[in-house]
Image (cartoon, rainbow, N blue to C red; front, side):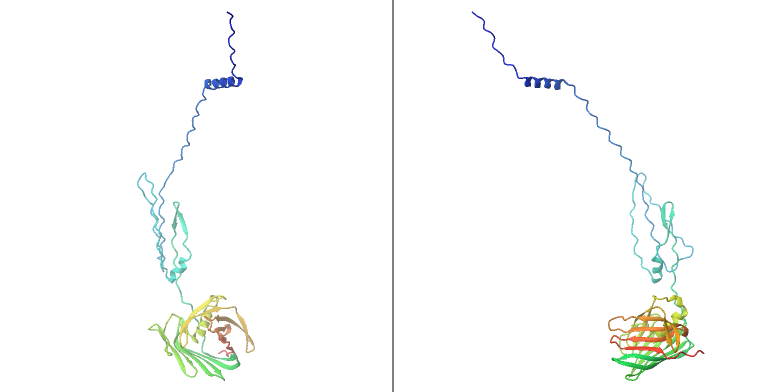
Length: 345
């Protein structure tokens, strides 16, 4: 019996053999050492400290005591080992008096003490002082009037009679208007260190209307049965205010440069209101053939139907009125200028 050869075995593909060898190599390869994470950086210690509460600002008083020193602010304390931030309370608002407003407008300087800011001793606020007044002596002034009245040219004469005797005064401004008649303004009262203090003011033209200054009652009363007005310090009437303005500027001319304002409560025969006068640039008037330097002031209209009043005060005539121009809302104008200079006594 003949021997048959063994059957032929199929060889595995080369790709399969290579894959098996690669797998054995990877399994038998030692594992790489495990990476150790880097230690986390150590946090810097947090230091806490107690912050002292700011000292309350010292109250402003009309007059500061000499040598007074505000108390030093105390340090904030906290239990040992505990950092506590004290609560800060906002200071309550202060009501300022007129004298304190000027000093409170600028905060007091601060000084350094132990690294903390401490308010310095506040300076004493300025005390309000009444403006000085120097009134002119007795005199009578004459004026030439020109302008428009009801749309027609106006030519007239006027006169200011100013009389001062001791502690009393009397003033009268007379305007003679041919088509209308004579109009008078009359003021009487007292002369004080603060200037004129009117007691009665009257306007006369086809009848009389007056205002009475009740100093004891603190009221201005009107004969026209209009409501009373509260009497303010330094109040004037429509005639005395022209003389009071001259007295204020005569006493201290540098006190009233161009751009400054003077406010006076001014009463007519029916009402009283604040008149705000603005000092304008000086102007030289040609009066009686001479150049007369004057301080010019203006009271602008307060509303649509109010009048504009312009006043020139002659420096060489003790700041008496050298010119007065009144412009009505209707367009009527009365321009009164000195027709002759008074003769020196």
